[in-house]
Length: 406
Image (tube, rainbow, N blue to C red):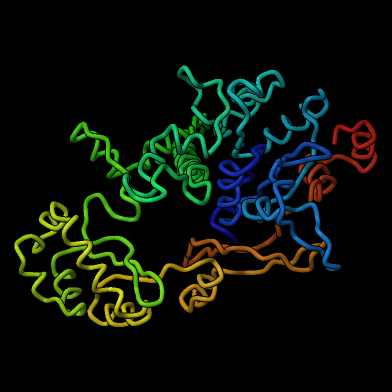
């Protein structure tokens, strides 16, 4: 049994941030019911190519994007723009512990599915609202997507080649990182609200905003600004507070060198055949290396090109200096450590036979993650959920289907 197998989650969210949180809860054992629009479902089902291929090599309607965030859930289609659909969702909410939604602020109140309405039915409900800008403030009514939040929230001002370099300019992160982080923070908040419910018996409303999460996750860079009043500048792959901590060219490509302290720098200098660097007053301490970055980095670049990436990694690992290659995803999934940790898995799928998945990184000794269901087909479990959870008869379910409520 999973750690959260005693919980039922109603997931009304779409795209990535909300579904990511729902998938984490599902991986931990919660029963997660994904409520989708009849006919089209979650927007990301159509966000392809690529699409999952069926047993005959033909594209299914399941985009890879959708498959990334909906494992271990059951799919139920309900049109809650209709009164009977609203009634079904309210009945499900009455029997649930958590509800996750990412509609625009006030968007569900017209259907009687907002927090206050559902709280009256189920005071124990933990209701998590995920929006771009939160429930308050001048931007509350705006739609918010990861890319624009990365820009507005300051991340892109820090990401990209440094000024003066060829191709300089702001660049977004290569995955929807703000969505993912919002999903993680949402999960933490949900678990905190459930822990509090254990003490006072009541649920609560969680207001999660992509912008809030983006600003919070600027971490040391936000503090660099707040303590100096000077906005940090883009440094490409370099680190604002540590030197050397970036990529360097090798005889056959590039590698990443992450020197975290002065002892590691001395070891690196010795392997590089330049032991004098560690005693040079310009480079002896990290503070001095940061101040003299422009002098040190070219010297290191001149030294690293004489060995291959594999040689650098092998030699520096022997002396305890952190470093590594820059892998593409094929190289990453072929890496022996990634294989040893079992990070690529497959799950049975009704159309494709098997569907690939990236394993959960959560390792619990007593209640490990279980991979129970592949990301569901649209409405795959409608009859099952309506019958098992709400006790509807086959005739009642058929009537709802004919009326296009489900």
